[in-house]
Image 1 (cartoon, rainbow, N blue to C red):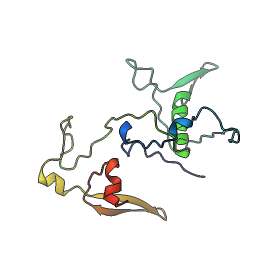
Image 2: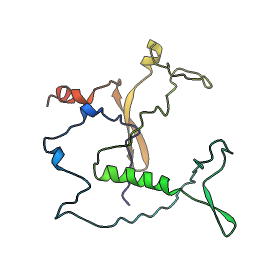
Image 3: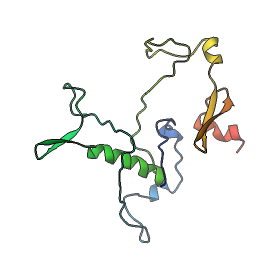
Image 4: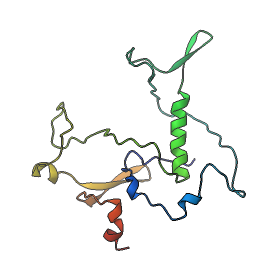
Amino acid sequence: MTQVKSPYNFVPAPKESEVFKPDWADQVSHDIPFEDGESGEIELMLRAETPIFIRDGHAEGKDTSEFSHIYVNGKKKYIIPATSVKGMFRNVLEIMTRSRMQLVDDDRHAVRQIMITKGTVINEEYSLTGDDEKKNIKAGYLVENNDKYYIYSCGKPLKIRYTDLDSELGT
């Protein structure tokens, strides 16, 4: 089975001015099919291979341990809400079709605590400014090979803007 993994939470989305738009972009519309275009149906099958946790998003202000459910013949049945499935499916389709991302949140989901003791609260001003912190940061990439995982070092991390790629790569 082919696996599609979303990189969107790990790769920052470019600003509007950084998005490549060819001269002919205004002549293409994704909602008007070509005469010789493809058409069909997509069938989706879900199988939970690990435990699933779907909290009831509408239970705000109520019991926060409440899960999404419906009642069938008076019995509670747990469900994955259609909006959750739709969002996941849309994400996979955007990857497969190389579509332009529309719904991108610029939220911070986590901060690595490199030199901070457990239990320390991190606020918005958190940054690695001291030499002790900076020397412990290393870049790398994770590779799976025969059910084993390896981290290959890339040296020190740096930031290259999308608009600077051509000059950095000499293209």
